[in-house]
Each structure stands twice: as C-alpha cells, then as structure tokens.
Amino acid sequence: MIWDQSFALSIIPQLLEGLQVTVQITLLGFAIAVVLGLVVAVIRRLEIPVLSRVLGGYVQFVRGTPLLVQAYTAFFVLPAYGLRFSAVVTGVIVMGVNYSAYCAEVYRAGIQDVPRGQWEAATALSLPAHSTWARVILPQAIRSVVPVLGNYLVQMFKDSAVLSAITVFELLNAAQSIGSSNFRYLEPLTLAGLLFFLVSFPASHFFRTLERRLAPTH
Amino acid sequence: MAEILPYWSVLLSGLGVTILVTILGGVVAILTAFAAGLAQLSAHRLLRWPANAFVEVFRGTSMLVQMFWFFFALPFFGIQLTPLAAAVLAVGLNEGAYAAEIVRGSIASRPRGQDEACTALGMGHALRLRRVLIPQSIPAMLPPFGNVMIDLLKATSLVSLVTVADLTFQAQAIRNTTAQTTAVFLTLLVLYFAMSSTLSAVTAWLERRFALDYSPRSRRGRSMRLVKTGVGA
Image (cartoon, rainbow over all chains, first blue to last red; front, top):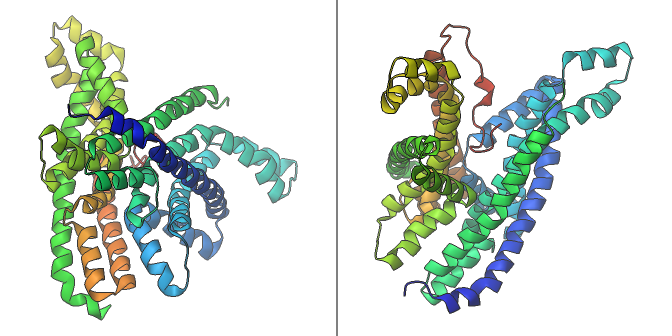
C-alpha cells in the first residue's frame, strides 16, 4: 500500500497549524496590499510631478520581478542595513508590497471606469478635492473592484507557499519538514495540496458569485 | 559590485537555464491549455469532466506545492523525475491550467453565426475548430496568453527550490561564496525585470500584429501587461 492512512491522520494537526500561519500571513499581507495599493493608485492619478512617475516605476518593477526573488532580497539584504525582522514579518511585508503593485493597477482600472459625468458633477457642485475622492469617486471605484481584489486574496493565499523558502513555517514548510523527518513525502505534500484546495476552491467560487452580484450598474 | 564580476559566467549559465525552463514550460503550458480548453468545450462528459477536474485542481493549489509533489511524492509511485522535468511539468501544467480558461473562454465567445455558417457548409467538428474557430480566437487569446508567459517566466524562479540551477539558484550560490548579498540580489532583480519587460514588449507587438483590426492605432490593453494570471483583471 503506497498511502499510509494512519500516518496521514497523525500529521493533520501539524499541517493545520501550518495552514493557520498561511492564513494569518495572507490576511495581514492583504491588509497592507489593499491600503498601500490604494494610496499608490490615488497618488499616481493625482499626477504629482515626480512622485507619480516614481510610483509608476515602482508598480512596473514589482510586477516585473518574481515574488521569490523579492522575498530573498528582503530576507537577506534588509538585515545588512540594520532592518531586522522575523521571517514571518518579512514574509508579510513582502507579500503586502508585492500585491500592493497589483492592487494599485486594479484600483487604477476601477477609478478609470468611473464615468466622466461623476467628476464633472463634483466640479459643478464645487466639492473640494478630498470629498470628491472620498465621497464620490472611491466608493464607486472600490465597489466595482471588490471581486477582483478577492481573486487576488485567493491568489495570495496560494502564493504564500513561496515564503517557505525564507524559513516561514507555513503550510508547505510544515509539510516538508514532516516529510524530511519521516522520509515520507507523499502524505504530507498531498494533504498540503488538499488543504490549499479546500480553502481556495470555495473562496474563488464565492468571489465569482460576488462578481456577478456587484457588476457595475452604470 | 566588482566582487561579483568574475561570476558573470555562472550567472549567464543560470540565465540560460531560466530561459530554457521558460521555453519548455511555455510549450507544455500551451499544449496543456489547448488540450484542456478544447476538452472543456467538448460535448462528451468523458472529456469534459477530467478536463474540468484538472483545471480546478491545478488552479486551486500552489504551483510550489505541485512542484514539490512531482519532485518528492511521485517517487513513491516509482516515478523518479529529474529536477528539470519535475520543474518544467509543474510550471507548464500550472500555467496551462490558467491558460485553458483563456482557450475555452475565447472560443466559446465567438459569434454564434460562425458556428452556424460552418454547419451550413457541412464542416465537421474538427475542421470547424481548425479552420474557423481557433484562427478567429487567436487575437483574443494573445493578450491573456502574453500575461501567462510573463507570469511563467517569473514563476521559473521557483525551480531553484527543486535544485534546478537556474538564475535564482546560481545567484544564491554566488551569494554564498562572495557574501555580496546586496549586489547579487539587485543584479538578480534587474535581470528578471529586463527579461519580463522584453517579453512584455514582444507580446505587445504580437498583439498589435495579430489584432483583427490591425492598424497602427490598435494599441488596446497595453497597460494591462504583467497582471497575475487567473485573476481576470
């Protein structure tokens, strides 16, 4: 028999601990990504001379380089400059920064999709810039991109496995260490895959439904 | 920076492996995408169901988990893949599963009239796909396929974790010998950025070249480069 059922059952608690770390990193990283992404998107749209261009370059660069290499860079280079964080904190920051670039583009599309008339109406009512953004533009822009952001959340959950390379003890790392100490990789890796699937499959279906529900009305 | 110059040849050999994995993975991804995408459109349940299951499983789990599974777990079934084969398979099948949705979606969204005209002309299923539906769908497939390829290129950095000596792997080796951490990783970031920017420019050119309304003006979707696959932005 290739599959050892009792071994598989015995390692589930350890894997669930790993899953818990994965979920925590994903949620914290996502919180950074949606906030940072929004700030970047709004500043780019404001067309502040140098800053907007720099942020444009930031978005391109982050999206043009692999998450793993970014994680290595943060993990190995930052401590040399006195910025010492634990692996988990580094992981959260890397995930947050990486996805902030993608989120910024999502918000940008959302802001672009707000009809011109909304901007003109705000001007006609002499709304100050900050209330135009906070009360008119962003609520509409964000509403239409919520499902896309949700898809990124799911993607981020799966991508966080990469952090096992910088010693973060998340689900994949848990599975690997069980594998190497028992010389049996089949059960831990299969179960790790199954756990990833059991979370991401329903989640992505939920966001697909939400996408239909939240389709823009204008 | 000067300390890592003697290691350029090592870095270049890694670059070669990264390009090799990208090309092989890309071929696997395209074959997978068409096989699974067309099977999903099939009228036969025996083709449709396995294709759906394949796409959902590969999209629902991490690429790295799949790669480790091919590398560490397959030997328990008596199948020992080389690191390169496991890496190419994982990268190709994972991106292929995302790309299958592109194939399925763009063929399914052809106007009905095209299908009906084929029937009226007495074309069989295979001929219809080969001569009408697939050629028409190519322009619609190109932008998202370009994104898949760029994502695939970036994902090849993961193969270093199953001991394939790609760019990331060699950079780590150089870091271990020279301790020039900052220089090594900045070089690495710049090299990857140069590669993905090149690939992005190539796909943008292909897109314009194969646009149905080919004209110098058709530059739609240029800003949508470098999105994550499967997110459908």
